[in-house]
Length: 123
Image 1 (cartoon, helix red, strand yellow):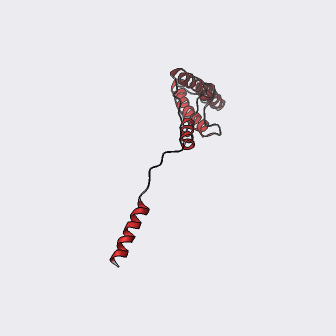
Image 2 (tube, one colour):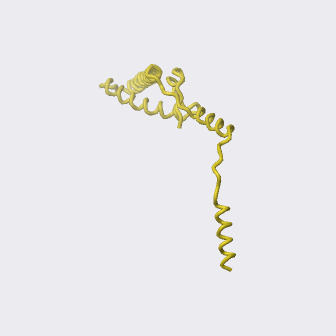
Image 3 (cartoon, helix red, strand yellow):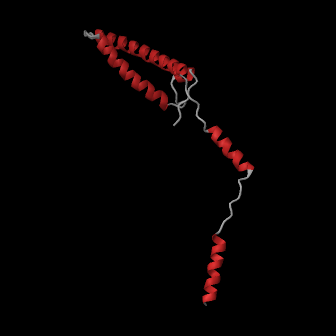
């Protein structure tokens, strides 16, 4: 019985040993192609700046229009905005948050500035 156990132990060792085989060329090429697809391009300063300027201009325009609409509605009821600059800053912050959230949550997942500057946001 001891000889049989010894033989089984040798068999197990033979089964557990593995040889290191070189990778096939197709596996290496596939890995390089996968790396190339996932390669992230760096964003240069000019494209980023253009994107931010366009998005801020859009937010600024929406804020000014909203300020005038709210002011006109309030004047129709006999009220007015005493501190327009302060109210503008409030509208600008709110519009900036909503604009970026809505645009990044949309189907295209980018703002108008990012589209013009050919930038893509990835998750």
